[in-house]
Length: 313
Length: 297
Image 1 (cartoon, chains in turn cyan, blue):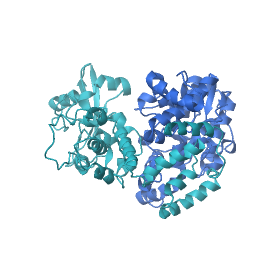
Image 2 (tube, rainbow over the protein chains, first blue to last red):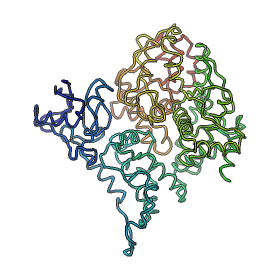
Image 3 (cartoon, chains in turn yellow, green):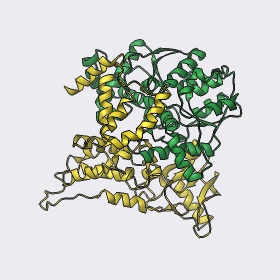
């Protein structure tokens, strides 16, 4: 069957910005997006640039936007995409700078990976045989080690889109991977380094990374595990940590969230933040949007208190 | 058609207009509900982060209460739908998990959940259970000449495994509802992204930066207003818009402004049904809705 493939092309030497070009090719049920690109390069236009290597969803080289979503070209069927979207539009990974056509600059991605010290740090030269201490690590790793570094999660990350210094899902999932490695001796320092700006508390939990990861690493879930571990390890003073602990406190007492009480508790003692909130607080109050922080707990709170009590047993 | 109505903390707290407009529209359409008056918070995913079993138990209480009533649950919040609906699917599928959670739930409240309840957002109920053709008959004030930018937010779409109504890659239910009320659905890139509200206090730059991007992109595409099925998105996009306005002017020039009214889904439906802005609680909005109302009339 003949199909049309639209590719966002860009040549830095001749183009000001990316522009779509249509290619007509013969495709069958077995045609992947990568095979289509190879066909176009070999038969129609040899100047088309893209990255690819293993052709088997292992090397992670050919991640691109396929109908607006981050996908591996070698793992994506042309026919399934046509069935799903009625078109094939291919572009370079979003939120990355384009070098040429479908090739983007991966340097920012690798810098983030390097920033989390992606190797075991140990002074102990007298380690037992490597297999021994790692026997039970698989369950703790929660698939965080399955990452193929394709960049899908970073490209899709909503926080990275507006804050380019955010460490991002891949690097933070990698950070979790070393957090549970029993051979590593700097696990507390690692956690400490993730508490400030650009660390674990800047994730908005948009679930994009979970959805686009071709290897089910679920990076956001690894970030959530890092947050839990941080609180359990005593890193409780950041606003992010307080978001969790104070949220629990309010719901535990009242059964529901009180949107006036929670921000007060989260920023308590942080004078700058509290002053910053005043104008908005007044506006919300004037618009009838501030629940009374001193109101009696609503109906049903007794049952919730019992559930919380049961947890502590 | 009757549901156990789960208003959510925001509907009973910082977005009272959501509860008000929901009741008005349900009444107008003749959709019967019994409100879960003693409801508890779903945990908004935050409690799940700290203690998954606790979040499961809290939501199992909600589910068990509706089960006793013999009703499916209606949510009006994208986040509640994602959390309560997602936990429901897990409890239904995994009997060992359900048994463990039921043990905790029974000890503290005497309730237990058998897995028989469905959790549906109002958006899905209108599209599927009630039906767009039936809804169209109630649209007495079609919003012709008005462009509405649909804003889904995160948890009504993702993770797909726990939502499963719309296609997360290309959702259409809001677009269908916008067309049903006679308006034009704006096409733009940001409709399925995060509003920035989750890091409202943690990181002002990210939070406001996202509001500017989403609203700015809807504006550029010609939107007169945005509509969302999630009150947390509403809070992000409405109450933080004046901060975003400053970034927008720095980026796009001093004469550029956002001024984008943000509607809750039932408010959009209610306007199409000819209800007054007052009766839909629009006085609670921080961004004035008057220019939109003027365009409608």
